[in-house]
Amino acid sequence: MSNANQLIEALCPEGVNFAPLNTVAKLKRGTSITKKQVTEGDIPVVAGGRTAAYFHGESNREGETIVIAGSGAYAGYVSWWEGPIFVSDAFSVKPEKRFLIPRYCYYWLTFQQEILHSLKSGGGVPHVYAKDVGKLRIPVPPLEIQHVIVEILDDFAHLESEHKAVLESELEARRTQYEYYRTMLLSSGEDWRWTTLGESFALKAGKSIKSDAISSRVTSDRHIPCFGGNGIRGFVESHSHNGQFPLIGRQGALCGNVNWAEGYFYATEHAIVATPHQTVNARWAYHMLGFLDLNKYATKSAQPGLSVARLKRVPFPLPDLQIQRETAAILDKFGSLINDLNSVLFSEIAARRKQYEYYRDKLLTFKELSV
Image 1 (tube, one colour):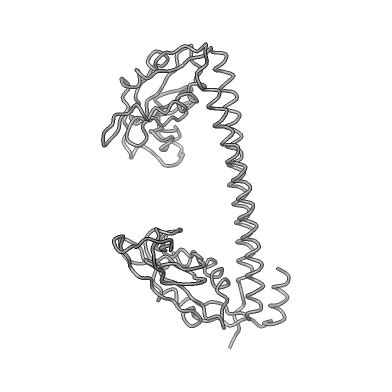
Image 2: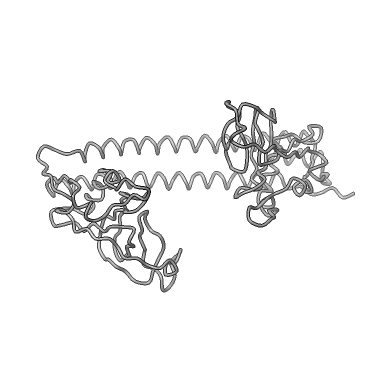
C-alpha cells in the first residue's frame, strides 16, 4: 500500500488522466448460441451468470478476458477468465495494453460494480449494454503504478481464497465426523424395540394460513415464527403450538424434510407436527426422523405427498429413554460445533472481503488531472 502511494506521489502528484473506457479498451458483444448449436468440448460458455453456463467445443475469446454479463439477474456482473472461452449473452472488455493492464481494468470494474448494476434498462429482463459501460471514465495512471496495484490486490485475493479454503476444509471434516457418529449412534441396537410413528407420536398436519398474514420479518404484531415444510416461512400474529416438536414436510420436494420448532410457533398445512409420547425424547426424535429418510415413503406421483395416515405406518426404532437423551446430547453438541464453525466461516469471509474492498477502493480512487 505504501509503495503504491509513494509511486502515485512521485509519478503523478497532480492527479492522473481519466478516459472513457471505450477509448482505452475494446468492448465486444458475445455471440448468441442455442443448446442445439453446442458441440462437445470443455470451453466455458459465459452468459449472464457468475459461472460457466455450460461447455462448448469452440471459443470466441482467448487469453485474459474480462466479461460483463449482459442480461438477467446478474446483468452487469464482472468476471475474469484466463484461457479460451465462448462469450454468449454478455460482452467482453479487452484493454489496450499500452494504456491499461487487463487485471487493473478488471479490479477497477469490480470497484464500479454497483454503478454497472445501476445501468440496467429495459422492461421484463434487465439488460446492461456495452455502449453505456463504454462511457464510464476510468483513471489511467502510469503502467508502473497499475502493476503495483495489481500485485497488492492479487495478494489480498489469494490470501482471502486460501483462508476460505482452510475454513471450508475444517467445516467439511467436522460434517464428515458428524455423519459418522450420527450413523453409529442412530443405527438400531440389539436391545432396541421397533414401533411405528403412529405408536410413538401424535401426528397432525398444521393449519393453512393466507400468505398476506405472513410477514417476512419480525414486527410488533407479527413475531410468532411460522413454519412450512422447509423451516421458518416468516412471522404471524398468533400461534398454533407451544413446546418442542419435530416437524415433517409433507408436500412436493420437501416431503420428509425434518425441522425443529420450539416455544410458540405456527405450523402450516405443509408441515406435520410430531408430538412425542412419553417414551420418546423430542430432541432424539428430531435426529432420528432426519436419519430415517422419510421421503422414500412419499407417494410416487408428479406431486409427491406424505399423509398422516401414511406416516403412521412407518417403522420407528426405540431404544431406552436414557440412551435417547445421551445420544441427543452428543448429536446436539456436534451440531452446535458445526453451526459455530459455519458462523466463523461466514464472519471470516466477510471480514476478509471487507478488508480487501477497503484497500481496493483506496488504491483505485484517484484525483483527476486538471487540463
